[in-house]
Amino acid sequence: MRIAEPQGFAADSVKSAVWLAAGFGLLKYALATLTQIAMQHAGYDVFRDELYFIVCGRHLAWGYVDQPPVIPLVARISELLFGLHSLALFRTFASLAGAAEVAITGLLAWRMGGSRWAQALAMTGILLAPMAIGASATFSTSTFEPLFWMTVAFALMELARLSDRGIRSGRTVALWWVLLGVAAGLGLENKWNEVFFLTCLLAALLMTSQRKLLVSKWFPIGLALLVLLILPNLLWEMQHHWATLELLHNDQINGKNVHIGPLQFLLTQILVFGPLMAPLWIGGILWLLFGRSAKMLRFLGVTYVLYLPLMMILHAKDYYLAAIYPLYFAAGAVARDLAFRRPWLRRGLTPAYVAMNAAFIAVLLPIILPVLPPAQIIAYQARIHVQPPKTETATTAALPQYFADMLDWRQKAGMLAAAWYSLPQTERPQAVIYTENYGDASALNVYRPDVPQAISGHQNYFFWGPRSYTGNVMIVFGESRSTLESEFDSVEEFTQDANPYVEPYERGPVFICRGLHENLQALWPKVKNWE
Picture 1 (cartoon, rainbow, N blue to C red):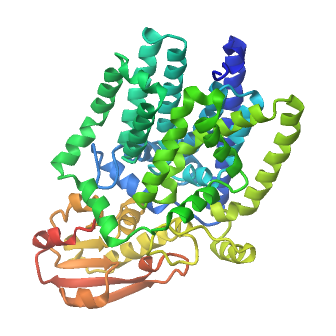
Picture 2 (cartoon, rainbow, N blue to C red):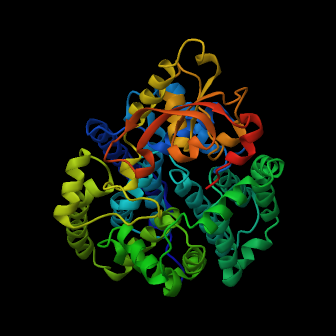
Picture 3 (spheres, one colour):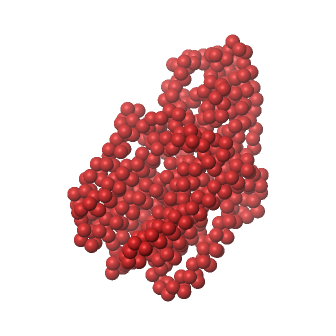
């Protein structure tokens, strides 16, 4: 059996499928905007990494130590268009990306042969998935990842469908290969994690009957477009001695990320994508692997079978798989269509299933997103006995790290600026503000343009260097007093950050240090901190 054509693929079918997808996308955007407003009302602000992306965007380049150029570019555009007064406005592109992820999930279900009920169920699944909710709530390299991955998958589905009908050349085939190459290339300029997805996808094609797609004369064209788009970042990496690989190596040897066993990793996937929705996407994988009607799309199921253990072997964070799940929510909804062939079963069971999941996620929402003030979130976690899984070993705050990293940045910037203003007028021109972490440096550089820009050895700040400062007068945050006293003639504590809700490494004293024993220019190579 072949996979069914989507409801005749007539013009009215296309139109209704697109309108339904657009409607769910609009719903997702509206919900995202409302949650952004709630988060800001609860006292949360720009996320640590977003501050860093903003600063990277002010230093536009073809690469950075810890990401390719797409997100800093988007952050720069967002800052210029919307500013930072409204989280909902600043994160407009993140909310739109979440809306597009929901819409493309529905279109995937439709192209797999699903009914409108299947399309709606698939979109509801990804709309209610906790990981997807969190990924589109802030700017990160994961925010836009599903759009690039799913565009690649959609193009391959269309090429497989055309090949199945004997169409292996022509303008339509060429356009799909061009789209595939462009989406894959842009995806790699967004996040290098896509390398593993593309590798598993290629291996899955070779392992199934769809290997025939790779003999197309347009395959080299798509590959060439991919290489052309990632070439600027590759040249940047070569010029900077493969900085990203050094960073990834440091993360592994320093034990930055929490390592969990295969079974726990799999259980975490079920948890972060909604345990009540797990039968849907798991059923989708099984249908793609074993369903007779899914033979043409078998490679998509094999991709997951390859990608999941690869992420386990690499000790990846749980969200490194997030971008692949729209495929399986879509496939699961189609498989459910086939299981419940009678329309009254779909119409009767689907709303009840969706309502049950919506109620479940509503209960968990304060654990997924910071929509309540910190003290209320801690109390709520204790009341329902649920805490998000940790992904980094150094996180010990009472709040989830994701929440804690949206607190205290304006106050931290104010403290550092106040320390600079406390200096005598004669010392200010030579005084530099140094922080151990890119979050603290970025907070000052974003929120306090009235003082000199902070420097740091963390991530890409290392490349931006110490500028002309010698280190004669330094305001330092994030280092211990004992270490500073061994490096400076005098060390004076100016103030303390004692916010109980942030991570321990974000609390502590701000020091004013004078008389660095070694010139800062000569010392700079030693402050590199890539992890």
